[in-house]
Amino acid sequence: MTDLITRAAIYSRAAHQAVGQRRKYTDEPYHLHPAAVATTVESVGGTTAMIAAAYLHDVVEDTHVTFRALAHEFGPAVADYVYELTDQFTDPAQGNRAHRKAMERDRLARISPDAQTIKLADLIDNTLSIVERDPDFARVYMAEKRELLRVMRAGNEHLLRIADASIATYFGRHDAETTDA
Image (cartoon, rainbow, N blue to C red):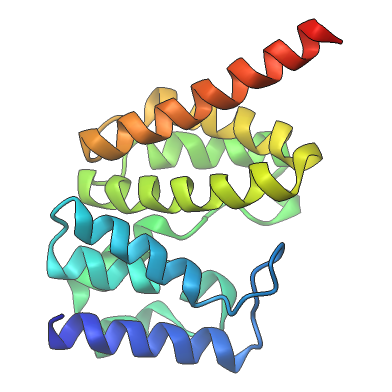
């Protein structure tokens, strides 16, 4: 692990711990999620900056860390990836959830292939947890991710296949359950 990646891992952990953030369904320390995303990005040959950004991808959304602080600490490349990955349409004044997610989907379709790779790793890790632990929300979440994957195609091909397969498996299983009922 390079110095940049080690620093990003420590910074992410400290930032999420400073606000007492825990995983919604498991109550595990939140920093385990960005670590899993970083491990996935590393497994497909992500660059040092991509892996560092994977560790940091939620810090601006979920903690008191700013983009300026990330750029100062980790450089513009890492901060730019985090910016690409940070939801831009979160204010309810921008419309209902469906409208905001549609705007976010359109934006994510245009982010860099490297940032899309990190987003795919994030989606894969979140999907496992949500489908397993919150079937009601999973119906909404998986429909949103199915639409996202229709337009976000520039990321790592291996991760795209995994994400596509998880969506297909979910909807195949869900359709079968509906048919059997």
